[in-house]
Length: 274
Length: 274
Image (tube, rainbow over all chains, first blue to last red; front, side, top):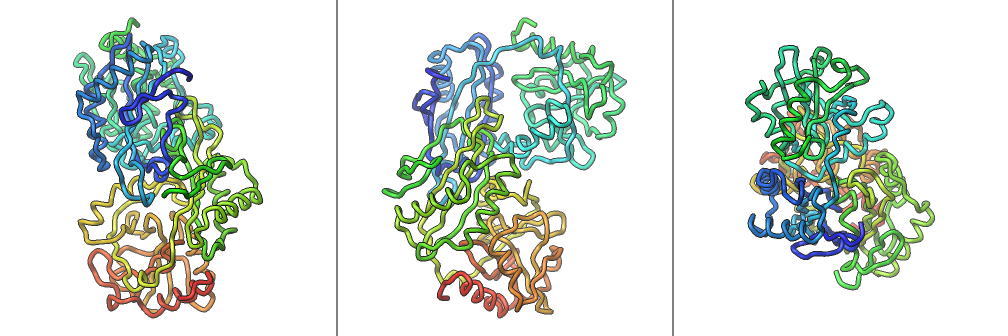
């Protein structure tokens, strides 16, 4: 942690000293949004998509970012240079600010921090195991800081020998707390839930891969019993094969053929040697 | 704000300097719980009830308070003496702590702050106007810091000439974001929603008032068209008459008879001269 910089409202501060007042609405009322993008060899990946979503998220909860896009990009570039972590994740958080009455939105605080993160090919082969849980995230299409249910479910995930939770609402599959969900049907259709989810940037890229038959769809919880492959996607996970859901093996329990092709295609778009 | 103290993990700090690191899970993931009680002439009101709920809330989201009840009460007493604000509200917040990976629960941070707040008899006569909104709070029976939806709805509340929002789920009335809801029926029954709500301490006290016919019940949204009186309750609001819901006047648009009796009874229990 030491000697790494973060940025609070435009000012560079050492991460170990990066503090905000407890009157901030994130602490008082869980009120804030964020976005998170990766860098590879100090080059931001899909930055414009992430900044589009950041400004949209802010607007959706009535917060304004007092830096324009050029200023924000300049700050991000300075952080990348100053910290000299070529492969990393950068998180931009916007909170409700120092509220006088602990409830009314004030001037937002803009917090930017960086974490070392590097691509690891082994993750793909290990895959992941999910356990389903009935929960619809509030304001799911906005990238808010609300992960209350997800973090509270960590013991439940462990008890079920899983790595993460897959939310469904009534009978419709939604998403993982930090990743989108895809299935490959027996007809080689690649389907991902269409609504009441956070629309991930990796998800968006994959939906545009014309060489695969990728579509948004309603995916019924019971349909999971009859699929060829499944995978989840996120900025850090890229394409991660789902090998088990609720203890049931998907396909032959190994990363599937189409999943592998989509994974390789994504790495090539991101400029990662797979 | 100046010269008032807050307490962070047992250490007294000036409120203007009361800060925590941005790695805290409240800021990163909206992860925390709290409780809030009032003092009258430096005497805490219903303190044991609030502390019961505080420890219960912490346990429900897998956090531990590293002070026992006696230590916590001693700290609260010191704060009351040090700040010398006889009529005030004290908020105790417990967050997920400084998480290394920004997701996993760490050693919780315990934040205590005090705000001047005094009883105002005029509030009762002014009453309040509510606008209904379809929303079920997640983990509603735990006093979490999640007020994302409520704060986001502030413009909606203003546009509807209301003072606060009344949540319902499908057709069942739930609660206001920071207050419980009661109706008085044409049979003089006093009813309050029974489930999927935060069970307020003022609500609990009123449910125990044996001289009124107070019960928990399922209250249908459409039943609001045919009630005599309505009121909301909270630590700061005490009993606040609801004069309008969705623009429709309740009763004769004035604080009702039973509401007034319950209000006076509550003030007497709290030791406030009404």
